[in-house]
Image (cartoon, rainbow, N blue to C red; front, side):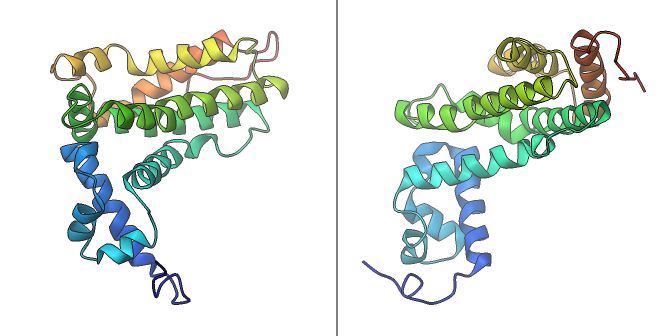
Length: 216
């Protein structure tokens, strides 16, 4: 059914933001099952028609939330590096955004809910995984392929190297979170840890005889 917004009224950006923020809040606090058109409309302070004008169903809402989160995490890798210092800067920015997000209280709560089918039905889990972690890994792999092709780093096996970098960033804090244990890293220690990880990663993957990566 066409709505006034679809029929020509300009879309209100503030409503777009309110809808996404409301859907995100429900997802991270109560799980995918709580993300309904009705609940999002109520929390966002808009009509159901306004939400339906943008998202036809829950799946589209989940897709929008995940794409928004992933885009924010991938900021560091949006620009193709032109020199070795660009590689380091990009990975540090990426790692800092990613790790800060993963150890946040809302994300830890989210991860602990994932095993509860009442909060996260299997279809929703599969959808969120494909558009979240899997998409992030795929984009990181492609970025590493491009950096390798440009001769800035030596990454002949980007799939494995991407997993190596992610593992170095996370350590076993993800396992701690699964068991309800506190993470050993905190927001204030993330920058130092990420820089150390990136330095070690680039030492392993430097172009022989040409590395200008520093430990500063």
